[in-house]
Amino acid sequence: MYKYITTATTTQVDTGRINKVLITVNAALTGTITVIDNIAGTTANVGIITNPTVGTRYEYWDFITGVRIVTSASCDITVNTMSGYGVK
Image 1 (cartoon, rainbow, N blue to C red):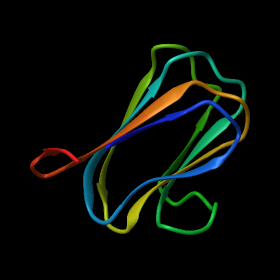
Image 2: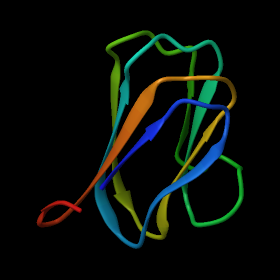
Image 3: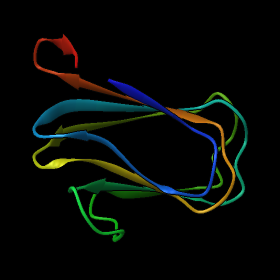
Image 4: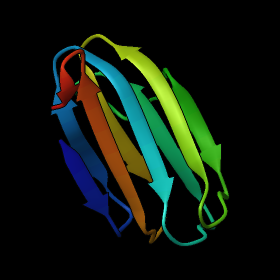
């Protein structure tokens, strides 16, 4: 599964167990991307990406509850989630 995010928002990308999350920055962002393993809330428990540059890719592994992304400003990112059997 994937989500294309372009605004300052909270996005539930996927739910359940996720093996791999790939965040691709399509345009430079002044602000933060908060990565959360949950289906509620906005407090980072996986990571915070600050002021990423265009073309940067971030990989995260082993989410248990779900993938939730919070962006603090307008952005241009793609978030892909993959289960154990390929793209979910």
